Amino acid sequence: MSEALIKKYANKTPEQMEREQADIEEEYIVASKELDQKLLNASSKVDFMEFGDAIIHVKRPTREQIDRMTPPELAKYRKNPTEVPYEIAKEYEETMYKLMEELIIFPKHTAIEWKQLTGDEFMAAFQTHLMTIQSKIQKDAERFLQQI
Image (tube, rainbow, N blue to C red):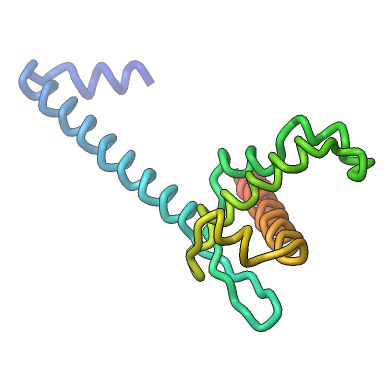
């Protein structure tokens, strides 16, 4: 490897080496921008959630949104959800309505409007949809890593 590098650069002038370095940096910037766009496209993908006769358009959640969906203070109540303290349950409910505002692109409503328009049944359907999407993303990531 080092012999190949020596051969490649031995006869180049400092100007030629600077130009090659600039070309490599430019390629890196272009590749980075393309990767950023691919990540943006993947995270802005829209899935459809059926609820009764309605079709709800839901953006894929970001890692930060997924983390808010599963707060650590709820983990200890996973086996006994009826024992969740009222304050924690209310805080979690507010977080879910805020996620509805952020992720549901059609029909579009604020968190307050989602709270006024929906009930426990819709909340459960929304949570199930997000868990299904999270599971799908995790399986896709695992398949991708197996291919490497």
